Image (cartoon, rainbow, N blue to C red):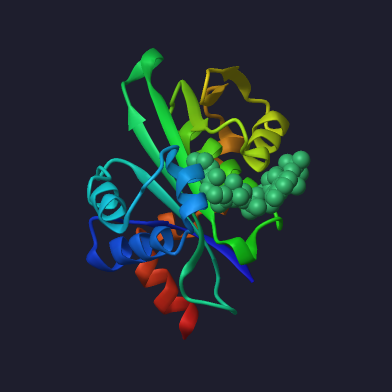
Amino acid sequence: MLGFALAYPRFEKDRKFIIDHLIALSKEDRFFRFGMHHVNDEIIKKYVNGIKPMDSVICAFNHTITDKPVGLLHIAYSGSGETSSAEIGFSVLPEFRKQGIGTQLFERAITKCQNRVVDHIYTYYVPSNVPVQKMLLRLGFVISRDFDQNTGELKLPNPNMFSFYKGAVHFEQELFGASFANIVRLLKK
Ligand SMILES: CC(C)(COP(=O)(O)OP(=O)(O)OC[C@H]1O[C@@H](n2cnc3c(N)ncnc32)[C@H](O)[C@@H]1OP(=O)(O)O)[C@@H](O)C(=O)NCCC(=O)NCCS
């Protein structure tokens, strides 16, 4: 069964989950994920160790199959007020793709950002990345094209009762302040 939880990279155990997930990506997927060639394991570790404590990392997991995240999405926040924004990067393991996991991660990211009163969110992707392009267009993102990189941008509405409710449903564990590792432990019982 599919579930979603927040990871906390400041905890060693959660950081390891994130690193393992990204290292499992193929050379081509790393290119799609980071938008550059030659992303080796060291670059991935440096990237994960550089995730700021204020950022959010959302994990998708299918606990009946594996304890490891099958999908992962990083929200990097910047600015405040009207200039606040968040950059999104995400990935789903190949064997779990085309099941809507990427979309569900993204929908959770949108709600999370809306509830944090982020003005707009954006994601960079290489123009040949068909799944991302499809997803962004369906979610109402505005696409701008550069030579070797596309940007999808979405202006967010203010939070409301519905978005707060949605956020609570998306991440029940936030109500208890538990870490991703704790959730996995609870589900194992
Ligand atoms: C991008 C990625 C996360 C999508 O994950 P996913 O779980 O397969 O996504 P979904 O199942 O929600 O599919 C999203 C859309 O792409 C379509 N799609 C998925 N895989 C596809 C493929 N190989 N070819 C064409 N369309 C595809 C789906 O039909 C869906 O279309 P819709 O929105 O019109 O219904 C995954 O392909 C991935 O990890 N790629 C490598 C990393 C990457 O590219 N990251 C994004 C840049 S940061």
